[in-house]
Length: 329
Image (cartoon, rainbow, N blue to C red; front, side, top):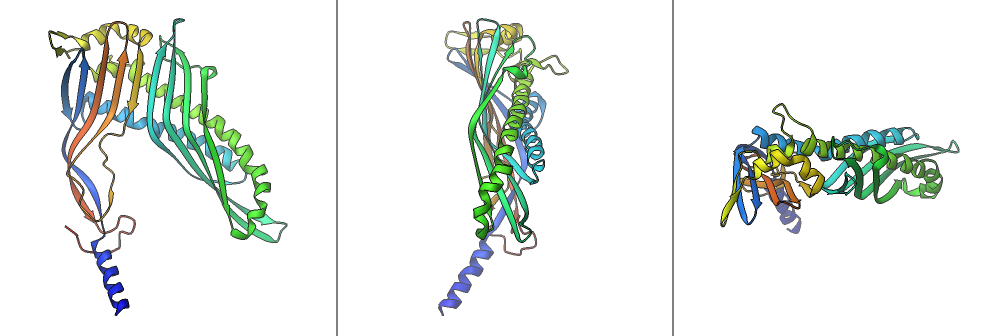
């Protein structure tokens, strides 16, 4: 009887399982700027316009860094007789710009971590076969850089990087005794090369952020900050108003040279598939950009978010498309 009840429960659990894939019905990109105790919000249709392009730029930063890290890691790992597996960047990058009296700007990026896996196998003494998998984590990465305020170019000699590096290797259980040998040959040497590659790749990602948001102009001769806060935006506050958009357009070089700027890049609305049994909410939102600027003349904040309405496509199992079960809704 107990076996029958267990089987029934297992079948019920299988029938109840469902994964959901979101499809956007409608949405908007919403920007909110605040200055002098007042605020102003404005929006554009989701996925379109200058605000949508800014969100794409923000979401591309971790992927750009991940691509560079994977190229560097694959070269180091494959060059030491192993096989590169997969590299993944996680976290939310935060960029801080701080001016110096000597006409340079110091930049710091935090909030990212990187995990890379590799495998290697061989024969010991021509008799024993072994197969191992290495996982290396580079956590809490902090990148520092120095560049001039004219063009935002970061010289490679002005970049520093640190973080917490951990590595572990899993081998066939009866071969753990050979790890010191493999470690000397592969892991320690690979760490040094991967570390140098990380510095180069993250430098490029950092330069991409500063260029896209503060230096590189689009076809309308606007940089990212102009696109986030257009020239026609006027913020009303108790007792008056401030033409923030026009002030930025007229004084961008001054602001970059004299302000502390914090730029947090989020992922926006989470439009990834959901694994589980219950249909998720229809309204999703998430921050893509949060900016704070403090200068001798003006202090302001700006936030850009995605707000979307979705419907959910049901699938029994995304991991196993052939699996059959009932729609739980």
